Image 1: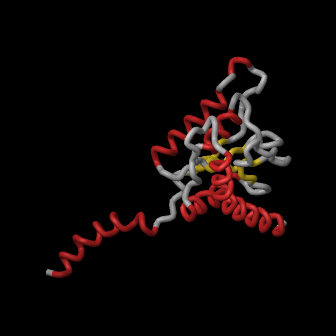
Image 2: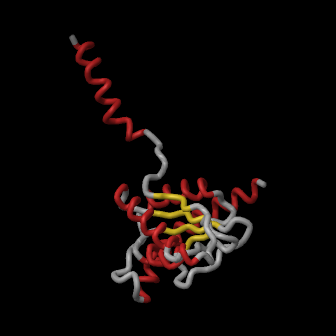
Image 3: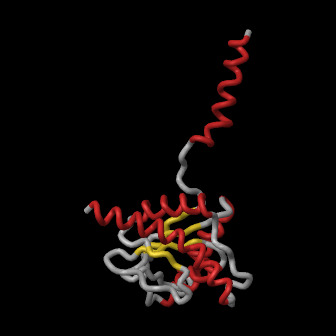
Amino acid sequence: MHRRRLLRIVPWLVLVAAPLWADPAPAGVAILGPVAWSPADPGRTGAGEFEVFLRVAQLQRQSGAVGLVCVGDRQGNRAGGGERALVRAARSGVVVVKLAPGGAVAPCVDGLFLDGGVLGAEEARGILGAALARHGPPPAAADAERPTAGELASIRAHLARFQTLLTAAAGTRYAAR
C-alpha cells in the first residue's frame, strides 16, 4: 500500500523539485554578437538600437535581473545606434558587459559598461548570470535620459562588484595560457 503511494508521489516530486537542482543557462543574460551589416549603410540607421531594445524587452519578460554581453568591433562598439541603446539600458538597470575581439574596450561616457577582457562570450555570460543571481540588478535612474550624478554613482558602485568578478576570471584565463 505504501509502495503504491510512493510510486505515485515520486514522479510528481521529480517534476516539482527538478528546477531546484537543475543548472540552466542564465535566463536573464543574452549575447549580442557582432553586427553583420555595414555601419555606413543608411538603410540600417537605428537597426542596432532596435536590436538592443528588442533583446532587453525579451529578457525582461523572462527575468527581473537582465544583462547583456555585447561582442562589438575592435573597441567593443556597436553600430547603427547600438551604443546609444546600450547606454540607456545601462542607466535603466541592465548590466552591460562589452567584449572587443582583438582590441580593447573603449570607455563609456558614464563609466557604466563592464569590460570582459579576454573572456569569451559564453564565459562572460556565465559569470554575469551568477553575479546577477548573487548581487541582483543595479539600481535604475529615474530618468534614463538625464540621470543625476548620485544615480550614476550608485549604479557604478553596484557594478564594481561585477567588474571585480569579470577581471578575476579574465586574469585566471590569461594566466592559464
